[in-house]
Picture 1 (cartoon, rainbow, N blue to C red):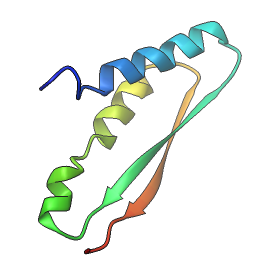
Picture 2: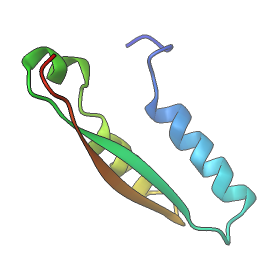
Picture 3: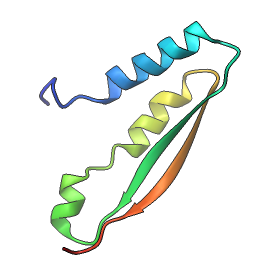
Length: 74
């Protein structure tokens, strides 16, 4: 994967840094959960939600929630 497209590691590092600066604050991360109608939408919006949730679960003081987003046929 291209380093320009990598989101998981930079995002988890950033959230960990925020927690380190203010360990007494609970951080809430809202992750979009994409529901796609067509195959090309499913391919384009590859499910990273589960991997991101798993990575953020390791950081103390972080609450992860999902927000459903439904894509419709264009």
